[in-house]
Length: 594
Image 1: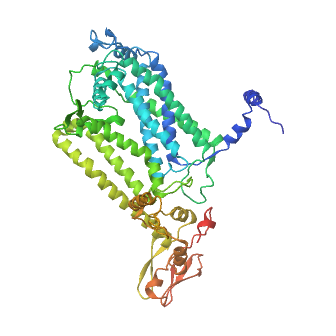
Image 2: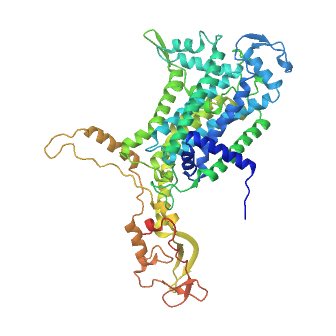
Image 3: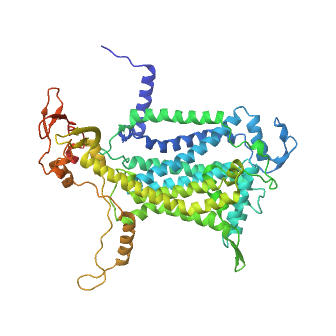
């Protein structure tokens, strides 16, 4: 039997041979194509961010061809009759022409904007997944910092692009930015002059924002995305705990052809969803706002969602008695604290958290298997508390809309959010920690006693008990494979000769922090406990009566009955059905079958 090769395949093979002979990349590409990637839906969050950024670049190139980054004044004459004869900047006029006169211009504007929103949403969600599962631990601290920097750059790119049309909303946002910059002590006014090229708004702002948005920030993002992906390939990919998954292997599918095919298809799905949203949902209709003018005042002026937390923080801060004059410098605490201090502390803590946790635990080992959030209650509760505070600030940034839509007092809403900002994160932390500990206790019970089946067995003496089904190897591995974290035990302050140890104060600090992190915990099931549960019959169908009856009227599993199903013989005779023991098979049987 002979096979024929298509002309396209021959051409592709010839091209590959030509390149391999001149670059020697064949071996590297072959090895790379066999790299294993684990298969879990949450790993697609990072891909959504990557694909959204690609869509942003494609649509941004189109928009750059028609946008005029100039603040020169002009009188608009075009198809949007409501603006005819209105004086505006060239930036705003070109945005209107792009929306109404360029074929596909409005669609591309909306694709660009929706892709930017999805880009930020996927980055934040991806970082949440990394945080809650501990994917930032060694050796991935650098990748965590890269991802954090990408998030900050995404904020800068989104805000600078949102401000380019020079409409009322973007102008108000820039005016707030000018106020925030000026609130920085000593250097604030100089920094404002540097950014705006003089007094706000000046004539250089839009061209400078254009350079930042189109050239500077995208170039840095591209470089960091490349470095981020390089480190992902260089380091072993993380994977969720499960049967046979350890720090020395990766369970999944090869990059080529399976992962490449899935990734390619997923890119077009993301692109299609963004295009569908852009075609059916209008966003940022600048023609309804008009060119920037500081005089119009109305409810509903808001930035994009990822900047709403700053808006909400500013709206919640009281203004009375917060402006001080010290050494000839005006200190506006009502702007400085909510817009500079609070975000600065939050972002610094977020970037430094991997190193803080490593300092507390003293764990310098490499970790390639992810944590289950329930098994690290303090970290999970901390993340939920931060998200709770973030969502409250986002809602506070919409307090005017809430007041107008629900006919409520804006003062009452503001005071409610002020109280919630301090109370809700504490409650969220406590509730989340209790939930995590409860889930750990549930896992412990499942490992020792198995699943409840809902099947009831009656004894001859009248007692009823429920049949339990033991866990299979995969389920057991998932629940006992975590490494327990305990508070640190330190050596005495002085050694045997009475000499004070170096670094004792540091050890005391670590011990105190570790108690905060790990004092409340549930110890995982040990092999001895599991063996004891088996030996006492607590893990099989009816073993729970061993403890209460002392073995006197304990039912025992007989051989299979006539129908092949195991039966139970109880004291006094009679047979009852019992759940069969699950065969101990699977990749984790040898390591977790105690």
